[in-house]
Image (spheres, rainbow, N blue to C red):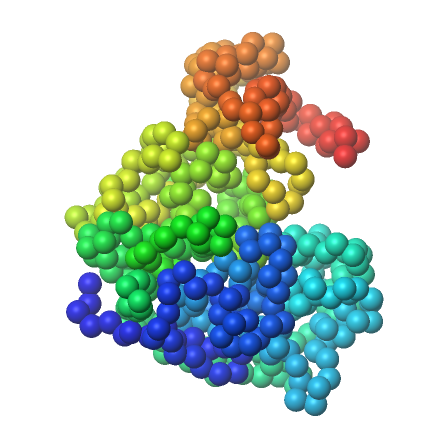
Amino acid sequence: MPDQYRNTIEFMLNDRTVEISALSPRQTLLDWLRLEKRLTGSKEGCAEGDCGACTVLVGRLVEGRLLYESVNACIRFVGSLHATHVVTIEHLKALDGSLHPVQKAMVDMHGSQCGFCTPGFVMSLYGLWLSEDNPSRERIEQALQGNLCRCTGYEPIVKAAEAVAALRPTSVFDPIEKTRVAVEAYLRGLSGGPSVHVHHEGLDLYVPTHPGDIAELMARHPQATIVAGSTDVGLWVTKQMRPINPVIFIGGVEGLQKIAASEAGMTIGAGVTYSQALARLAASYPALGKLLPRIGGEQVRNMGTIGGNIANGSPIGDTPPALIALGAELTLRSREGARSMLLEDFFIDYGKQDRQRHEFVESVFIPKLAADAHFAVYKLSKRRDEDITAVLGAFYLRLDAQGRVNEIRLAYGGMAGTPKRAAAVEAALVGQVWNEANVRSAAEKLGDDFSPLTDWRATAEYRMLTARNLLTRFYLESQGETAELKRFAEGAR
């Protein structure tokens, strides 16, 4: 750990640089914008990252290039913004008072009524417009998953996105493009610099530069709260008023931002967000490519990390069951070094993981998907997009030449206090012919593996029934029944 810290958080806000030396680790970006900077265009609707009224863009360096992403300011901490560029709705205003093309498209297509949610929609559309040429309607809807409107309806907002797509960003009228080169140089100058420590009113926040710095900090402060994307910890503050001091913000640590592929598989750093990982995971593990877009909204996926989803140990985290079914391995790091384990062994009991207080999650390794393997993930929730899981099933299967089960891993979320394999079901299937009778017989043993609870998401009976049905679905899809199942699903909707 360096002996010398810088004692200020520094970033760019719209067209000005900001340095803050008096800052609580609990300070959210939304409150800071509205109360300290009087930038009130960003609104508070839910304070939990669901409605999108608070959406802003945050620019950061990713693999050497400047990337702007929509984020929820209500659960993003100011302490996590070191070496970034924060862009609010106010920055879109031209000097002559004219509307930005994205704003004008919203007006022309009648995309706003009461207007409360409109700044958030504009910023989400702006982020999409900056990054993608002529996005499909599906992609537009995906970019708007995290923005809720209760009076206008989404059709005119989607039409606004389609209308502005043909007009690409240029430095003539776009404020980000006008300063992109200068901002990139500014952020590059801040990245990789000294670690940050801000002490204010008895509270401490740290922004380390390297993974080794995190290890040293955890050795000194084993009670510290590690924050990557704050999609979970943000709610600890806004909804539960929990103390989180001291805080170590790791979202900007370059050493945790890497995705490395090899013949053996893929290693994903703990700081890699869902959005960063999506394309590469989808290419190598197609079922993950279908799962990740259903995790939160676009803003949550731009902030939340796979490492964080693992580390918080939630029984309804979406990625752990899928990674367990793939046979993933987790690497933990401390000042003493690194240790690895099967991901399934990390989860011990509800709220308890095999992580020492001075350790942190460094990376997860996913073995390469075998050419003859069947792998699928199914998520059940009350609504399709931006909703918490009721039951998630992940299934990995390899058959021998005679059609018998050679290797199988079945993992579920929402069925126990931890993500967990269905060991009894697996044992009943190994060595058996992979047919419907054997699958349905083995599915009855789910009761030996799980005793699900009833809560507001689902009843215990529903969870058990659907867990069995998901296994049957996996069997049918492995037999080429996908088209029939798709027609059934579309009819059910």
